[in-house]
Length: 399
Image (cartoon, rainbow, N blue to C red):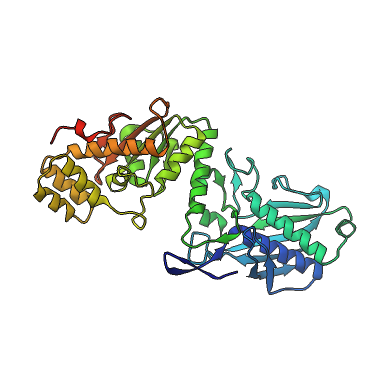
């Protein structure tokens, strides 16, 4: 594996997923069991086409079983699972010893299940059925592929060797239940531990793709539950206000982080009929200018947006300069309120709504009901979008 990649001119270390760890631990355990000898490292392929050479730890060997672990390494994209041990226990069992809870990718001789610290799926909408271990399809396919390749490499007649038994693989993580509390799993209906995930096997540093996939899964679950309305908020400020002040069902709320555009298109794809966006003005002012990724590293034009909209409302030059000198949006809000130009907040809310609909390519006759709420840091409502047609600044009187 190329250990480093360059992002925005900076050097970052790659890592590998929990799925790759589970795959590597399984291959190592099977190799130890078949050869009756410990190993230090194991090599696996990944869907990305990159081979991984993984260190093997915690080796144990019995007569009909073996288990090993591989330590999760997120590279420079560290998450809650970084550094934890992912175990796999491989054992030969008779048909009467097979577990009730197992994956949906079993073969005629291979069965995969989960143990301590791996969650189980409790809601529809994921690519894993309810009641199954939270091991996604790609890691399951990786495990099955490496098991078959090892059997072929050793020239083993697996059916003769097994004699009617099966290879039972149990993925577990002793720290999983505690670490899962630091993840999105509870939002996705994954209970009791972490999930074994990864579509490429590789963790790309500074990548938002895994985060986006988790948010998409959360939206899909809410849709499968029969919800037709969704509330998108950047973070806790928007969530708390929408729930406590506007009576929104907490189960309708999804924290979208900086991914406004992505989440709007996912809501359109999934067919939500009502979308409300609520959050601090510091984030949503960017949407009013068509910025759909609100991370400050991507775009930070808050002062420029506020100043230009105030100028269109006829604000005097000294006010524009004072706002431009503010270091935060909250400081801007205080200055604007003190000078009586609160109308600008309504302009921003209506523009944000218009931009959201434009980004989603919604026509005037499309029935998606949308609203935007702008809040100050203290929880006060600065503005609520008037209607989907309120987009022309000239419609607002000066001050």
